[in-house]
Image (tube, rainbow, N blue to C red; front, side, top):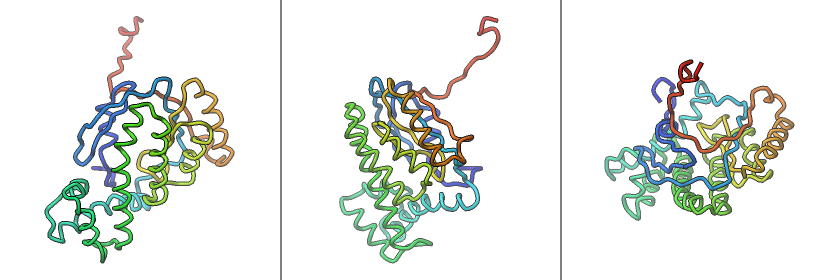
Length: 251
């Protein structure tokens, strides 16, 4: 991202500009493309757990963050270097032919750039897994099939922890305990290396859930009590202007 020093996607920008109330949007990125909307299941909302761990994008954290992104770019470079084409993004490569994943794996058997074959294979497997679970997860959510939705979200979180490697103990615990305390699904989100976790919870049980969730977190990580935050939110709108002038307030 320009001025930040990290190689990120466009998720934040898209959410800021394209969100709709009580609706979850499904987009494809690089380039950004709208795919579908799904209504939030009636009677459910999001609980947000802010870990209090700042998701640094400088120094050592910046290097770790960028390595995940650079591995995807290196996969594209390896494909192009093998004479397979002149692609810019990984997704079109994998969708270009039935045997494209196999041919890409052949192109990275000796590694490429600064990454080993194993590092690139893990990143490719993660990309394939995440890409494949979006559609069934979105379909389950649109049908209010929260059990199936939970399964797909849990799989995504597991791969994020084990393969992408951008989670910290605090966000791992928040995702795990959210499900233990009754959330239909929970996952870390954002750049990783800190930040927040969302949990899908029943609106009527949200207050009790937040209390147990925050108490459990503070007992495990008392040093984050002052900076962590726990609250609920519906699926909100895009950015808008809030007029707080005295005239509009009737003062």
